[in-house]
Image (cartoon, rainbow, N blue to C red; front, top):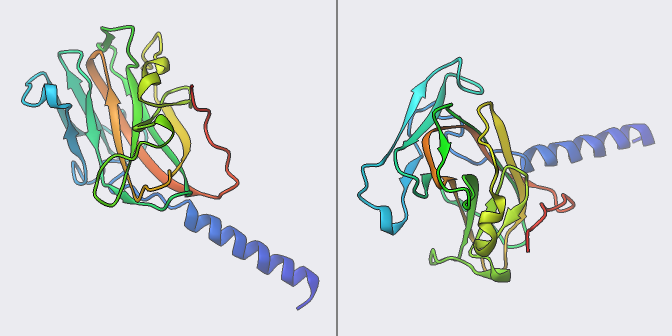
Length: 215
């Protein structure tokens, strides 16, 4: 094989490998199959409340892509959201986690001390228990792209809710002892309606920089 052909072959293999790594492993990421693969999340103190509801709605003009999007409406400013499938992972792997979000104009921040919107990636061991490496129980990804642990989650607060589509995105690394990854799309301290679409979890190459972690 001549050098030029070898270069093309190596480049093709490398690109194919990146394509495999970049596969989105979220089931029903754009809600095109309704609520399939998604469930309501409520902290224990709020279980049974009638103050929140969610549905998948068909609004081609409102969705970011496709025909559908998830609409979450709350009449009390509690912490809640929806979650998808739990992913099998290996320690040391890196993942880019993202979702698109926007708020209806009726939405309001009721508690300015809380982070009103974020993604929470929880790392679990084989038994399904949280892995608390580096003082993290969970990785919270805010609109700024920064990541915060439990103690710093409210450092991700923002002054104004976005009413046009905004992407939340962060790159995190799987901790020692973790074998599962669980993602929740959260709002906190907000009333009104929030829309979510195009959720993604993709394994990325080892050389991908991690998001800044607030300490």
